Image 1 (cartoon, rainbow over the protein chains, first blue to last red):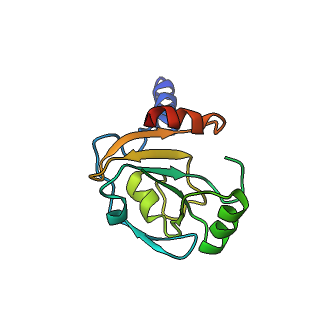
Image 2: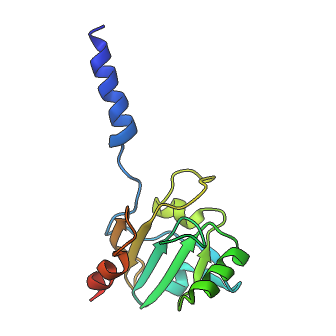
Length: 64
Length: 84
């Protein structure tokens, strides 16, 4: 039974304390090729040469 | 500077969204989660939706700022401040 607290602590770490995989400053964005809302292809090359903002949102037609 | 919205929605869904909101920037349709997986926005290729994350990328393709937004209100203003 003495192992139980340790196991619970591990579970909590696994559930809440796992490090995010989000790319951090200093890393390079991956190659990609996607369609935009008008059907145009946009690739990583299109972003290079100027500063860009990539804004991820959960779902079209929802607030925020 | 260029701004891109990114979600997992189809071209059709994002076209409707862009027209409704009159966004002055393109919305990218990451239907296969390739960009989101590459940037760590989601960890599963079948994730239903993207987490609210924003990246500022420099002219060489390097991430210079990354943040996750829990509450979208005020996000635009905070981002504009960062970009100044």
